[in-house]
Image (cartoon, rainbow, N blue to C red; front, side, top):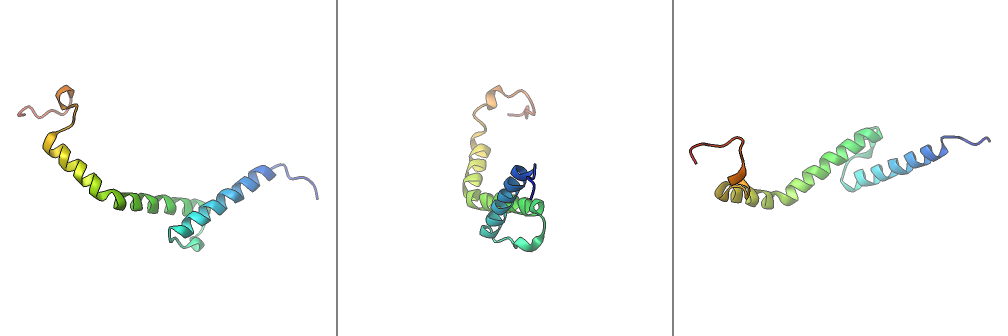
Length: 85
């Protein structure tokens, strides 16, 4: 059997695919859904959703603080100013 010039790319692609499949399985994504690209996108979406869920309280607390106290740089902001403040 001759040497395959793309062996490095192939083995790295397989390793990358195996990593994506493992991550998808850990996230509860059905790995039979199709291509590596679809798995990657599904994993990204699930990770984003999980991050937002885990950080929802902190995000809401931060947003509430900004609503009450404004941003630290409010006094220097020159765009989108409410002239009534």
